[in-house]
Image (cartoon, rainbow, N blue to C red):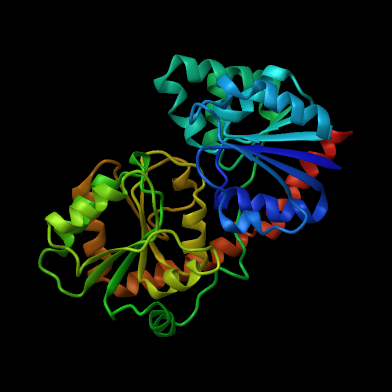
Length: 362
C-alpha cells in the first residue's frame, strides 16, 4: 500500500508515525514547512522524502497547490494522510483526493479556528471532504462533532503513544551523572517555547517558587520563537544558577533528562494528548499540568497536580507542594508508570491506525 503523508511540521510527533509506517508501507513524506526536518526523520530507512519551503511560511495552500497536485499524480497513493488541518489538510481537500485521512494535531482544531474565520472555513472544508478523522483525545472529537457536524462514527480516537522500551524509569543519580546535573530538586519542561504553552506563567511561577531556595533547578529542554525571551528573563532575574535552557535533544537522549529530573511540568493553554506528558508518565514522574480538557483525560488529583491556566501563582503553589511532599511524587509516579503501560503503548496504539488504513483502502 502506498501512503502519501503530508505535514507542515516535520518534528518528533511526525517521526513516531513515520518510523512505524515506513516498515509496513511504501511511504512518501511531503513536507511543506519553513523549518527543517529533524534528523530522526531524515534517517528513517526506506522513507522517501520531499521537503519544500512554501513561499508563505504557514500557508502552503496559497502557493503549493500545483506542486501538491504534481506529486500526488506522480506518486498515485492509495491513501493520503494529512496533518495540520488548515495548513496542509486543505491541499488534499481542495484537490478532493480520496481516501483522505485527516489527523488534527490539537491547536488546529481547538483554538486557532475560533480566532480566525478564514482558518475555520479551511478546517470546515477539510472535515467535510475527508473520509475519516483520527485524533488523540475525546475532547478533540467532541469539538469536531460540535463545531463541524461530523458523525462520531467518522472519527477514531486513540492516543498516539510512546516507545515504552525507550521511556521507562532508570536510576536518578546515574542519569544525573550522564547529564552532568547537580543534585537539586529538578523540574523538567520540554514543551516548545511558543505562546500556546504558557511560557510566561511558567517563568514567573518558577521565579516566585525559587526565590528563597538554592537547591532547585528548572531544566528547559526545548526551542522555539520565545527562546530569546526566556534567555532575557533568566538574565534579568539573575536565575542562571536556577534555570538552564538546554535546547532540543534527540528522542533517544530525552529519557535520561526525564529520569534525572524530579517532576515534569506543562503550562499549556491548549493541548491534545501531549506526548511529552506521556513520556513523563512512563518515566514515573510526578506531573504538574494545566487544566486543559484533553490533558485531564490523563491527569487527575490521583496521579498529579492540575493547575489553572494562565496562573503563575498556581505554578508556584504546585511546585511547592511537590517540593515539600517528596513522598507524593513517588506515589504519583508509580501510578503514572501503570497508566502509561495501560494506555500509551505506541506499539499497541499504532495497530488502530493500520485498521483505519485497511478500512479506507477497501
